Image 1 (spheres, one colour):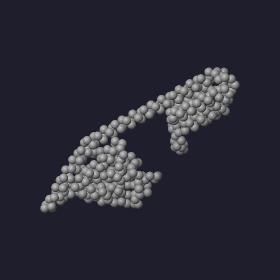
Image 2: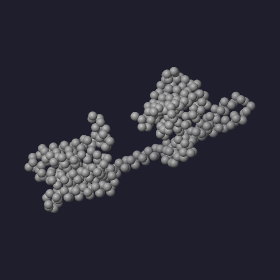
Image 3: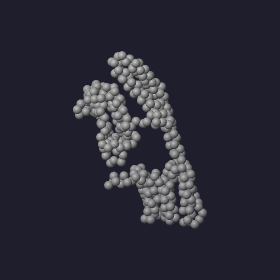
Image 4: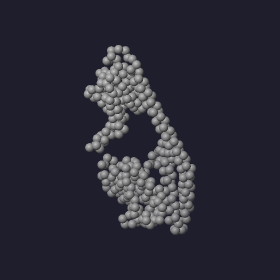
Length: 381
């Protein structure tokens, strides 16, 4: 039952800190007033009605983060009744200060000024009603605390904005540094690979008198085509890092339609890849399609580099509750590969987790290696 109540509270933006603060604002002032001798109090003692009004004025603190202005307005209305009945005035002040601070922290400067003005007007009206005399020094303290709360909220708001701006600037600088390094080092070497592979393939194509050169030429064409694709994706990545507009027609975002091309490229380099699609295909969020494509790409890359395999299978299954991707091969498993773990599996796991999925890797049931990822379908429970 407690869990259900907590979940319901979170829907209203109520956290544990809000519950604790509300309890403190309720219990401590009431306990202090009840503990003091009644002769020390100039105002009327708290009775059942006064405590009820105090509770009603304090409860808006629970929802102040989600409804800051409404919470303060409700509190002011209840407090005017409370003060009009001449109950102990001071114990209401902390609640109003907290709510004004929240308004100043979470809303605009104009809203803060308006709400402070309404709060001041409420104090002046409430202070003048019961005594039927001029407002004296008893209202100066609340007005001062209201000003302190408003200025403090604005100062904290500006401080948070400065921190966010500083963080964004550092992130932008780091992205630019990465973009420069990718362009100056990686892109340069890929261009060299593409150029030399293309020239070598062209020269071998002219040697029609020697049929043994045909497989070499085909491999060089595959290298040239693959490096061209990498260059196109790298340019898109550089545009994203630099914050430029990305032309989708120039190089579309990889999706599950590219699995067939991925299988063909892997087959061309010597590993026969079988692609199977099970279930009724349906459009998926772009982030999910990119994730599945990149995991399949990394898994097939590992097959070519480490597995010493002849065949591999990529199986994509659309289920009602989730989408599953499995890449298996007939090569040596992890235990026999003799290679140290790199960042490939770590990256695949991070990609799967970023979209709420789960990655499982290990030796396949019939030998070889297996990479399987399952991602819940949007809206599935």
